[in-house]
Length: 338
Image (cartoon, rainbow, N blue to C red; front, side):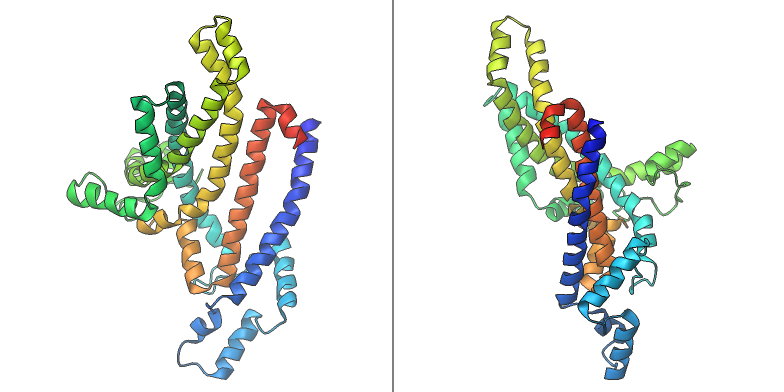
C-alpha cells in the first residue's frame, strides 16, 4: 500500500512537470534564430514559397493554437515529423535511443563500480597516498572537457598505438547488426551467439565507455568520500568501535547508512548524462539519440528538438522514480516523508 501511494504521488507530480517542459521547449525553439522555413525554402525562395512552407508546417497559426495542436498529437503518441529526414520523430527516437542507452548504461556501471569503492577506501584512510591519488583523479575528471579527452584518446590509442578501432560507429564495416532484442549490439550479439559481431561491438564500445566512465566516476568518488567521512565520524559508528566490533563489521554498518545518499546522488548524475553523452556520440559517430538531438538543435528541426527534450525529461523522471523506489526499500521512513 505504501509503495502504491508513493507511486501515485510521484505520477501526480510528473504530469505538470512534463507539461511545463513541453511548453518551455515549444516556446524556446520558436524564438530561436534557426527557422525550418528558411532552410527548407533555400536562399532562392520567394515570399510565396515561404508562406506555403509556413502553412504546411502550421507555423502561420497563433502560438497557443500551435501548442494546442501539438499537445493533441502528443496525447495520441504522435511527436510529429522531422523536416530534416522526413521520418516520424517517434521512429527516429526508437531507432537511436538504444545506442545512447548502451553507451550510457555501460559507462555508468563501470563508473559506479570504480567510483564507489574508491570513494569508500579514500574515506577510510583520509590524506594518505591512496586518498590523494583518488582526489587527483576525481579533480582530473571534473576539470578536463569531455571533447578534449575524447580527441586525445583517439589520437593516442587509434593513430599512435593502433590498439583502438576507428571511431566510426558501433560496429566495424564488415559486421552487420544482430537481431534486435535489447538494443545493445554487444548484448544482442551474445544472445544470438554471434561472437564475431560481439567482439566488434565490444571493441567499438571500449574506448568511449572508458572515457565516459571517467566523467561519471569523478563526482561519484568525491561524493562517496564526503558521505563516508561523515558516516564514519558519526556517534553510532564510534559507539560500534567502542563496543569492540571488528573493523569489517563497522565498515558494513557505515556502508549501510551511506548507501542511500550515494544511490540518490548516482541517480541524479544519470539524469544529466544522457544529454552529456551527445559530444561523445558526435566524436565517435555513434549514431545515438544525443548526436541526433544535437543536429536537430543546430538545424532548427522543431519537431525533433521537442521530441528529444521530451525523451530526456521522461528519462529523467523515470530514473528519479526508480531511485526513489530503491531508497524506499532501503530507508522507508525517509522516502515516505518526502
